[in-house]
Image (cartoon, rainbow, N blue to C red; front, top):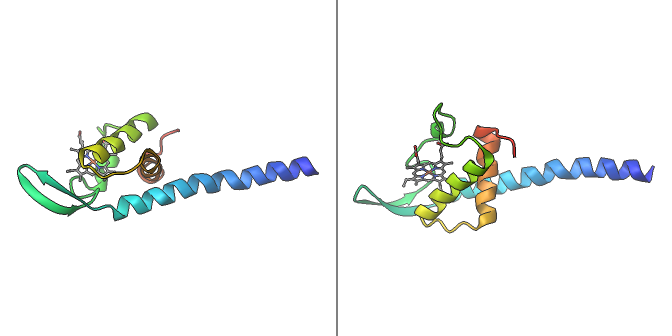
Length: 106
Ligand code: HEC
C-alpha cells in the first residue's frame, strides 16, 4: 500500500517538474530584450525572433539535431547577444524550444 502510493507520487511529480522548466523558459524567451549592432546598424529592444522567426527551429536543414546542440545554440545566442541568462535559464529556454519545436530526446 505504502509502496504503491510512493510510485503514484513519483509519477505525478516528474511531469510537473519538466513542465515547470519549459514554462520558465517560455517566459524568458518571450520577455527578453537586448540591444545589438547588426550589419553596422544599432538596434534596440531585440528579442529571440528579431533575427530568425520561429520557422528556423523547424526548417529542414536546421543546425540543431540533438539536445546537446540545442542547448549550445541557445547558449551561443545568449553569449553573442550578452543576454545574461544563467546556465539553468539556458536549459529552461532549450526545454521550451524542444517542447514546442524540436521534440528531441533528452
Ligand atoms: C542578432 C541576431 C540574433 C538574435 C537576436 C538571436 N539569434 Fe539565434 N541565431 C542567430 C543566427 C545568426 C543563428 C545561426 C543560423 C545559422 O547558422 O544558420 C541563430 C540560430 C539559433 C538557433 C539554432 C536554430 C537551428 O538551426 O536549429 C537557436 C536555437 C537560437 N538561435 C536561439 C536563439 C534565442 C533563444 C535567442 C534569444 C535570446 C536568439 N536566438 C536571438 C542570430 C540571432
